[in-house]
Image 1 (cartoon, rainbow, N blue to C red):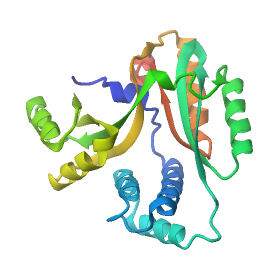
Image 2 (image 1 turned 180 degrees about the vertical axis):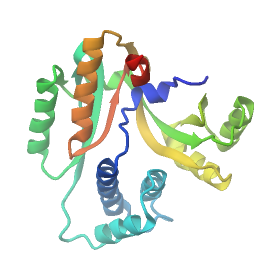
Image 3 (image 1 turned 45 degrees about the vertical axis):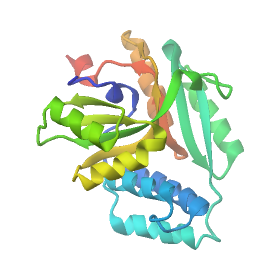
Length: 249
């Protein structure tokens, strides 16, 4: 497969301006805090922290920032008591949406996420209303600017323990069982691969094509609002939206 890959259609990513990059680092810092609280500050003995550090490096978070976040979390005391929670709902056009947040105030966050859905023509639903349409997988996006062909990438992925691979322009997306994610990532690290992204994610079993321009705009607006909300960690959906370049033509 090449070009319009499945992952790019369902992982809502905006251009990373400096301000957005700073926001991403803040979000990863919260994930580090939770991982340290659950398993301690040593990545060699804390698998969850090891995965978050890999995600941070894939996002080009400087090592100083990563180490500072770990030390801050380890010395917690004054730190916020963050909780992870997932909200589910629908965007216009019947698009299923999952929003993963980290918050120190559940009531405030629930109210504000509901407001974002309502304000943009969507609706927040009960827990489980759309989760059954998705499957949690490890997703590793590799830089393939060296241009390995599909067969070479397939062998690399299988040798590392991945379950599936998609090849795009200058990149490859590997999917793993969530329990195998850490091992596959570490195998690829040892093989000298460069990660563009590495995380466990919610991947839809099927996608819903959205082609009506007005509905596309509404769906994008809702996803943008959710993505920009300070407590949001990840936004997943099952919309197959036209690429923005296609819309401009």
